[in-house]
Image (cartoon, rainbow, N blue to C red; front, side, top):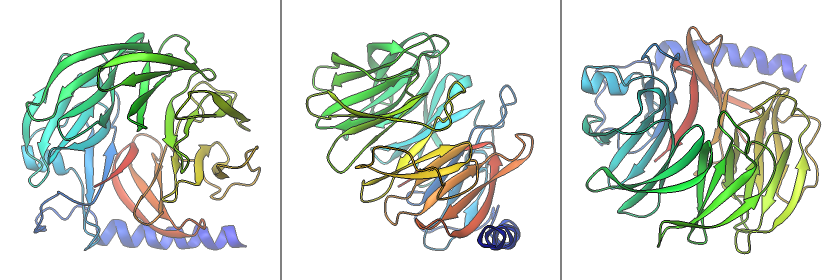
Length: 340
């Protein structure tokens, strides 16, 4: 009965939000797009229909295709990530092999960084420097000068580098294998831009989070692996319940207290305490999502629903109890949500 009630509620809020709040082209926002929630919609491979949806957290106004409207052109092919540094947004566009650097107030492009082979994720290191993972075989982490908006160095890492986290002044890189096989995390010292150690976890690590103890959790094909963020030893490996497919599950998030990890498995979103030794069999949210993120300011869970991959998708917001808040129509194949 509870699931049926949630389904009816989801239908109601989906109709309301998508009709009343989406695509308000002429809505003026006093601070521009500098602060809010940003949904990165990957778009269909090869169709140049990637986009960004902006959600103003004060007014709850939603603006789709914000990049296209600001620049009068397409964002490109397969948007992966949006990072923030130096008052600018850095949109990583994977299959267009570029990063669009935008002024956050206007969302107009101020620079385009090119010369990538397979760019994936952006990580701010400090006010002057950021990292970007790149490569589908033997990979690199490119060093980006935030102020000059250009590549200044590259760091060889493992195969198919994906997400990164910064902890204890070191950067952990998940080497997913790309088109090959890898089972490691590269650890970089940003002071030297060198890998100084490698941690073996399990096959195909794709996503990383940092918990309240400054330990790093890696989402792998078969296990959720916890690594000590200071001495780089593996503390525990928790078997996943739905792990038969390559890159499945591939996304996770952590709550604002950094004590509960969420993973998007086939049967739904699982909530796992950082002290747990197993994954719960009953999902917190009984729904499969393409992407998963958590608002660090209030703990709301954002599930990215790509629908059938041929029409506009939705982002569904939940309380940390699993109760639906609303559903917002966004762009094609929403993959990630970012907060600034």
